Length: 192
Image: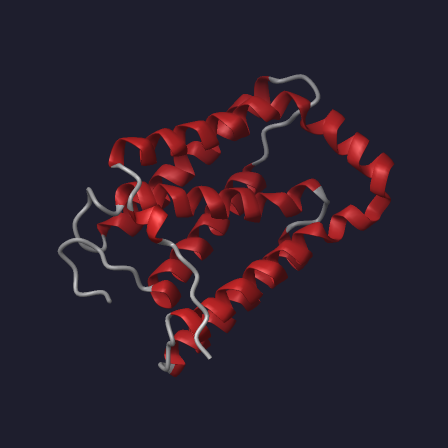
């Protein structure tokens, strides 16, 4: 059985548009900051505490998608890839269970994991070899600090170092997933 998922459109996006997508995504995160507490109260009013499990659900859906992609699209036979897949997934579950104590915190891994992925995508054609991972991680950390700094000056929000570390850790997990599971071609490197 061969399942074909077309990701060709991702490769065809110009470098300039990749950085525009990073900028728009980041600005969307920042623009949402003043409305976060009000939005969260609305969500809790609509769905109650069951919304706290949405992060778990999204991790499971993404995990299932990538597992199907690895098995049927890429037809990966290397057991090390699947070991890395399950170890990284397990660490993501541990982050959700032990570090993310509230519902809103459970969205940090998803939001900053996606940010890490799109920054990697934007950097990967411009940065040689494995430095792309270092640059991506540094930029995500900087954007997380800016995020928390904005929250520090907003009423009803607080600066929280734990959130910066959670954002950075989430992007780091995304980078590990890219490096050891998806193994993209990086210009000038030997990674498959």
